[in-house]
Amino acid sequence: MSARGPHVSFSHVGIHVHDLAGMEDFYTRLLGLVVTDRGPLETPLGMLDFVFLSRDPREHHQLVLASGRPAETPFNVLNQISFRLDSLADLRAMHERLKDFPASEVIPINHGNALSVYFRDPEGNRVELFIDTPWYVTQPLRIRFDFSESDESLMRWAEETARSLPGFRPVREWRREVAARMGLE
Figure 1: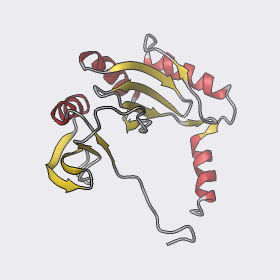
Figure 2 (figure 1 turned 45 degrees about the horizontal axis):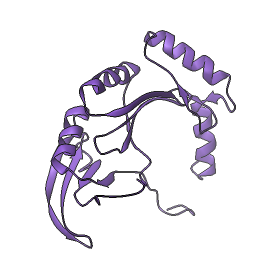
Figure 3 (figure 1 turned 45 degrees about the vertical axis):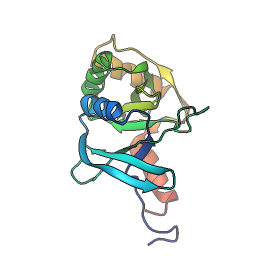
């Protein structure tokens, strides 16, 4: 254990939903998440039903859906749920695939350090699908793009854009700096 405490890494997120079966269907069909467990549990909010979902056999769950979302909530405090993809081709395919799902506000965004597709799931939760780029730029950053260009043209544009932005450098340099601040190097 370091002076900063034990090593921690992010594992999963859980959200309350209105329609447990509908949301299970959405995330299993769109992202290929697999139900790893399900069942009721008495909680401080009363008896709730839970569905545990994952795409990684090392993780019992990456997403937990829980019944009990209030009918009226003035503001969703959940900013986003993000999923990393392996390639631009996968991101493009998922962008196209979203046309067949009850998702809204589908918006491709260049963050400089990532290319993302944001959308709202059937209950209005914002979801991000993204790929990392090999660059770092100062955040936050949000530049819309579309998929009308080829993968090669899109990545060329993304790099040219990143090079013109504050803080540009290879992400490996940024990671070394952050690791040093974390006391890991």
